Length: 512
Image 1: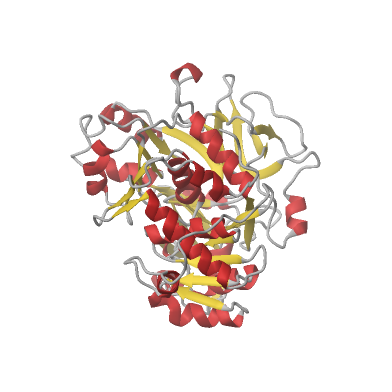
Image 2 (image 1 turned 135 degrees about the vertical axis):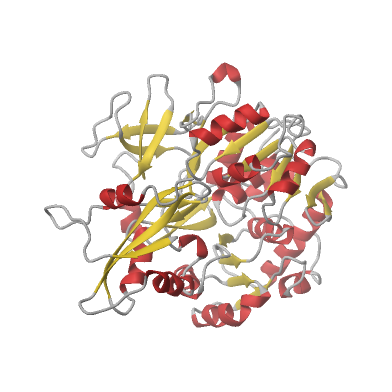
């Protein structure tokens, strides 16, 4: 198929729609059906709404709404109109939203009706001119206005290096950074995965992930759309209902927590997965026990892969047997077009099996951090490789294993939790002298945070009260599961807190 001169990602996705536009594109868990023609018309109407606002090129559209097909259509419309999509986790609270909106300066903010009373003032104060609402029951001012717009729209002309999305991620300093992803970054990765994972005519995807991060928004959604595949849409993950739908599907993507919960369902049998072709896991480490139990129970071997907000997907275990086996505990090989190397702190290439820093290069690697030129420069090597911040090794057969995250990142239920951010909030509380947050193993979430807090002289602190206060300030997935008040923290000769000792001390807290 001849490539269009327009590098707009939407144009490529639209070109992959099936010839029969009246075929079902999306079937929701609430019994709604959307045809490909519905996707075409509705995304055109929302794109026309955005165009009518007279936004400047590169304008950001910030979106914090519950998962719905209409939210997906807003994403497609933003691409179609050539603007920049900025998805925000639905769990974020006011302090977080204030930072993101202040930093990104979006021209448009879309939020739920129930949050509009506090989101709108934040947006207005930051200079945002347009605030719309969108709810998961197909209501809201965005749809009311879009309903009056034309259902015909020519996709905006965009170059491959034009920005398509900004995904906020964090560093170990706790300050969130906006990773700028281009149309070229996203399309190149989607095309590679379409081939590497063997997407084929007739595939049906179960989409049970959120759509505010890479896994659900880009990997799963682009995969299905670029293949013209039907999507079985779950607004929220429900293991029992997912198991009931497995016989109608061929592809499932999930974080390890979802696989743990599916294994708890008696209905998960070989008969239930008889039509399934591929199970993909990522966003957090998959325990080898889960990997083995899944294979024994279903006869399917989960395919683990590795990616991040700044790069979309980087590596994958093989899909086709002739490429090798899928090895639990590894993330497979670098994807076609991706260069991956492991180096020590001095910049020397590590030998086989030696642990070092993972660095990557390729057409999928982001354009840099939003309004952070110095930070961007710092995160790339002189020869253009991105320093992922992950630590890993490559074995004799080329399989890559992620050993850990540089610094102290916690991955809980597939979400990144940055201890420095949480420590900052705890340290501001009355009576707190210092705090340390570490990740410990958890049977359901993979990892959860535990806070260790030192009181100021004469202060009486309560761990449960500290956790309760955090709940009013931060997203739930960031909240430590336990908080201990102690007289002192372990330190090395340089006075640095020894978090490794704290992790060891508390690692058995949530043992099954």
